[in-house]
Amino acid sequence: MTKSHVVAAWAALYGTLALVWTATGRGFPFGSNDPAGGASLLRWLPADAGAPLFAVVLLGTAVAALSLPTTSPRGTARVALLAAGWSVVALLLLVVPDMRLLARAGYAPMLIVGAPFGWPPVDYADVFTWQVVNMAISVAGGLLLARALLAWQFRTAGACVSCGRGDGPEGGWASARSAARWGRWAAYTAAAIPVVYALTRFAWLAAVLLGVMELDPTVFDDDSVVWAGAGLGAFGCVGAVLTLGLVQRWGEVFPRWMVGLAGRRVPVKLATVPATVVAVFVTSASLGMFPSGAMTKLLGGDAWLVLPMLLWPLWGVALGAAALAYHLRRRGACHACGGAG
Image (cartoon, rainbow, N blue to C red; front, side, top):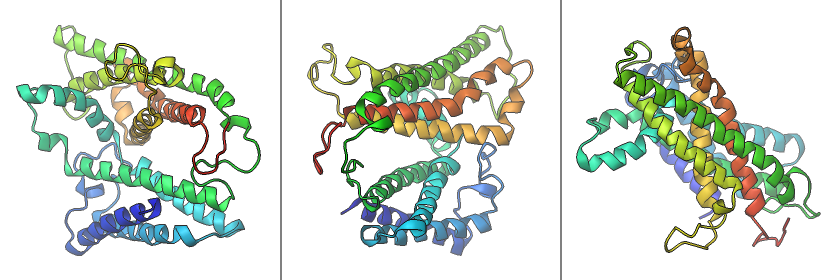
């Protein structure tokens, strides 16, 4: 099964579910049906319009994905199809998800470690809601579509479908040497921003626990934001260290203390896939915060809590760029075309 067929199957199944939402008038997870969607870009979307819109876009994507292997337009038609395809990718990756998906990723280590001990005392149904599940499905489909669309873009441009290299010698920004230069700046930027954010969250948690500061429950929706922030802070610190691995030797070869793996080369996708997913989570979260008013709630006496979050769009872009640079630097010779550089 090709990448296009996988995308077509995903889009057809999800599109069929959207048809069920449309026919029954129930189940659509976003817009007016989302009580916690204050930071969602879809919060003004009526459910009776959102469900059929999802069905049309997804089923149309399924049909288009099936035709990708045999379609080779040129000129304006190719540009129009690429614009439509990447617009759907942007919708799936950046518009449908919101800050809750990033928050759940921050919760995950704490939930996994504490689950056997019954801590934290949360109802998992309240954490992984129907809305969050659909956001994760959307991101998974968006990434699959992006990979299939990129392969089609390469093929219709006369480049290698697997690596994107053309017939001539590789140079410019995509060369391994160039990627090593700009990728270093991207990685350092992507590592610094979450550390700054984490420091403010740890300081906030300490102030609340020590009684130095009283929590205002109107800051966000409830007082769990303090623990969510602490979880995201810890997640950010770990992520910052791993981000540095994109430009360090230990990010290419497992260090000696890793028993059983010491000296082996780190698989490229082991680094790029998580970095790409987090970059999507961060970028989508930042896009929803600004128009929702979540930022303005904290401006004033608690502005120091907001300032690092203003850098989240840069964090997402820098992390995505660092992951791309790591891929370009380490991909080596292509098994399909033999290209290297």
